[in-house]
Structure formats: C-alpha cells, structure tokens
Image 1 (tube, rainbow, N blue to C red):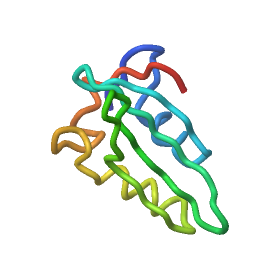
Image 2 (cartoon, rainbow, N blue to C red):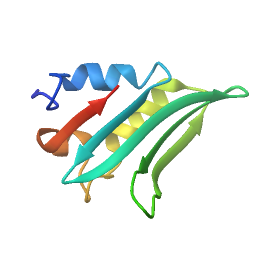
Image 3 (cartoon, one colour):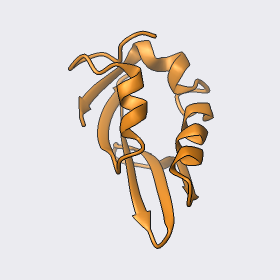
Length: 96
C-alpha cells in the first residue's frame, strides 16, 4: 500500500483512525473534505463532507457497528467514482 501524502500518514493508519471518532481534513484533486466519526445514542456515525462554498455531504453511514461503517467507507466511490484505495495516491491529509 502507498502513503497518503503529507505528514506521511499511511493508508492503514488513516483507515484505523476511522474507528476512533476521527476528525480529519484532507484534499483530493484540489477539493477539500472532512471526515468525522461520532456516537449518537447507540449508533456510530461516519460522515464525509466537502469543505467549499457549497459544502455537501458525500457519504454518511449510521450503524451500531464501527466495523460496518468503516467497511462501507472503504467501498464507497466518494472520490470521483473511486474508492479511498483507488484515490489514495492523490490524497493529502491536512490534519487529523
């Protein structure tokens, strides 16, 4: 596996952090995104939003299982029809 650019965050570390209430900002093809995870009642919510003038939610899942949430994120074609694994070489983590 390659590296997610900047701060040398490896993709497995990026994915692992999704299990622990993350808040990470990253850039893909000059578009900024915010991924966040949090608990609400007994559900884990994992969400990805664009950070722009007209911000929008591009992914959200709510499930009691953190693992199911992360697996859904891994399979989601969020990045111009690509998954995180297909787009990883063009992702720059800005913080988180």
